Image 1 (cartoon, rainbow, N blue to C red):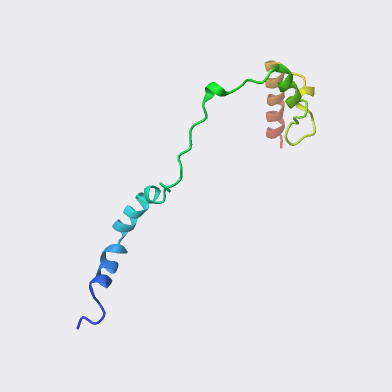
Image 2: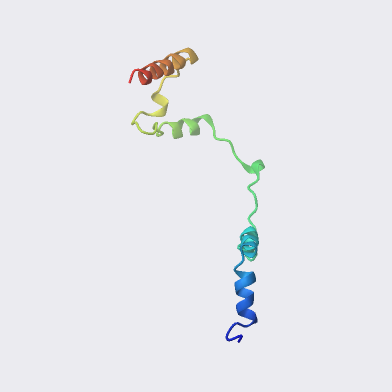
Length: 98
């Protein structure tokens, strides 16, 4: 009459595979997957950060390029806000005429 349907089969079918139990396991997954044996890392203190001098910044910028081009960062002339706005408006006009 009962066959192999014992307590553990009942437990698995009605409880361990239920949507409620699986949902609870997924909610707690972040807690149980955390490795408590790993040593905790200390945050880097901002008090020990040394600011770069102007010469060091210039040395870094002398080799930096603008992504997607081969233009060096320091060779680009600064533009005024009105020139930037005119450039963006021209690009928008081109998009609308396509």
